[in-house]
Image (cartoon, rainbow, N blue to C red):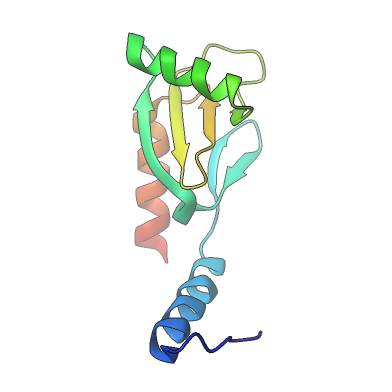
Length: 106
């Protein structure tokens, strides 16, 4: 693994260590065999409000929407750090519980 000197090598080493540590975490199951690295999840929200429906439409227009529902009803929306919006058929509480289990299991 290369570490580039950007003038502040201490920060660079911390970033590399964070990436290395995050690679050891188990991915979070979003349902139907779809997984996501936990460090990429910014927020998990319910899909029943008008603002979240607008969020989905805007993500679809930007080509940043990922649907992992397998044709089922969308129950949770996962926002990623890359501005991707993921639709899941799993309840938000269940996704959060799986994320917390992953944190305590590491």
